[in-house]
Image (cartoon, rainbow, N blue to C red; front, side):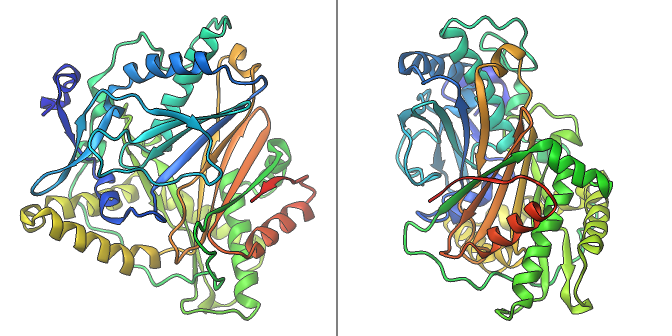
Length: 430
């Protein structure tokens, strides 16, 4: 094992425990529920394959804790160092397809190239969006340097020749665990009533708008872009609910990841995210947009408070620390985790919104890049639809991941945005 998460001992064929969040995924991943997400950059010039191949070698050496495969022990899964490079392949038509995690020495992330696009796909067992973005920015830095671009400053990028820190491998959930009372229980959420597509189910709609136009609308109500968009999402769900196609549950609830690195000092490149769940309860009546905005703003502020986050962190880690859970054989743990996920986790929320925020790079790099994009893992079949947001150079790119043949939710959201004067451009919809 990499004793004390020491990077040198890890390189000597060491292994790592899965972080607290990663322990969920081996039990639930399947061909459909892949737990794979994609980051994409659209460059202004066609990609040079020889340069990206060399950049992958350089960058992967700087992030050795991603050069691992998933292995199974008697009680827990673990990550074994294999020093394998990620596969470089042509971009697939369907994004975020499953990894062959049971295969020995199988890389758990890949690089995809097509035309002027470079993408990286990671399985959540390895890292979250923030950790993947650090790798991605370093990869782009190496790639552009190899193509002859002079980059005068690092702009906060992890450079390929910088030392690998032991803290980058830590499980920050365990580091900041403190036993406190758990959060209150929640009611079952309402789910969209649309039928699922035939396999492969995932369809993605790519949408773009100007950041400053959305900011004007958000600032009018003294809310953030994330809070504004969540409110539009909830308003659209309410419209569909009131349209008569009701299912059980009257809480409309959105799952929103919070990057804990912004709340607690951590340099980890592994998962360090928790979720907040802003909602409206239709048992109390219908809501105006202004009422939703006010409610979402206050819920987000309260839920993102470090003491409230501590309750969720404590709840998640406490299960792992129970002696009974630790003593169960792995196959029993997997069955139990999968059953709990199917029966509970997918019932908690009606949709998902992930906002990666503004991507900042050195000026010389920004001049070579057109835009960024994030595609979330395929949503749970109960939830059916989710979306991501990412901003770069005044472009806000939104990707809707949809398992159904209906685009009614997207239509409601975009109709509201255009109705407020925001110019919305649908880039593609497969």
